Length: 374
Image (cartoon, rainbow, N blue to C red; front, side):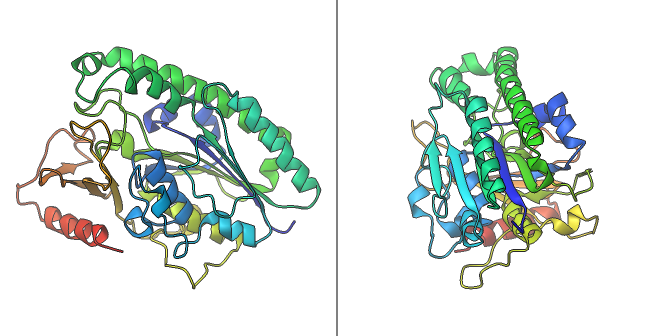
């Protein structure tokens, strides 16, 4: 076994603000490289996780909506799983359904019962299995999808309210309490899984990535009762913790993108990119982790606002381009734009579009370039 193992723990629907105020997540932060400004490509799981696994935006890979898992251009974009499989890793995913993560490269692709399965015990058992691989001198990649926040939101919000239910948006305190209860269960899960990893000493020879795919509304903006409708920060800002024995724990506030995870992991593991496949949109974060300065990259995100329909559209109709200071949103469905000064208006309440700020044109040009890339 000459390379490190990879463990990705994905907390589906995990909000950054809750992680920042969590003793469990802060204990992890004290041992890891924590990126406090990590931006997802898609504020819903399918687009978000295909971008993570391909290191590229769905504008190019084909997976840009709830409906486009099967449009992923697997002959043009190699997944992180395929890279690891080619390097003799045993690869195992435990997921909520068959749509959320590209299947190619996985030895085992298991779907859990999100209602009935005990994910803590299930994932601890998978860690035991992975540890047995280590004893046989076999590297492994384990992807663990914690879906219980999603399931709770589905049952308690999505099935009960619409995006325009006044009852939901007038019940902010109840919404917060509901979400907090779900997040607290995620903390208990994560604490148990991290303890299991430590008990098995898998943290000695693994790179561990703890992430969320997107956040969840608690009623911030009328018209979005959960996620996948808008491109505001409460769903676009995710959390990212890289844990490895040779990383010096630190917090990095520079904006990064979830498409940067794959090139970071491959560089850390010493695996070269395959030139016969498309170039990645993401870049390696290893220089940042090592304390070097690199230019901040803008983050592109997009989703499909269902408006008054029951299902999202087949193609995205809401896009944003973001720096750590500014965000431009384009609502393609009604041809409107929004511009926010994130430093002075982090809750995105004052739309500065049309106020002759030079940043508006430069962000608009970049958004159109990214949107039109193929």
